[in-house]
Image (cartoon, rainbow, N blue to C red):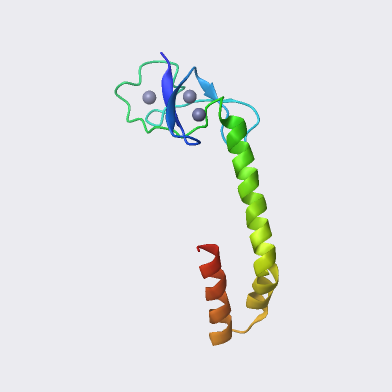
Length: 113
Ligand SMILES: [Zn+2]
Ligand SMILES: [Zn+2]
Ligand SMILES: [Zn+2]
């Protein structure tokens, strides 16, 4: 019995035969049941409370890695432009007070903009 995952690259379902490569991993690992922690391909999990795991399908795995790398590079570029490292160092060096608060707030705003 196979199970399904939701591929979060384009948002479609795919059939999994028991192991999948998770983001950040190079090797596939066994899919386990959220309910009983046993491998999903062993036994009957129809009564288990199973959450759907988001895993990129084999077809979109490369795409997901590329996207992640691109997002990281983009963040680094923006961070350099913003001067994140220097601002961080200044926040840490400043004594507690309005100046420290203002700068910390500026960083937080930028991070979640
Ligand atoms: Zn799986
Ligand atoms: Zn189970
Ligand atoms: Zn996919």
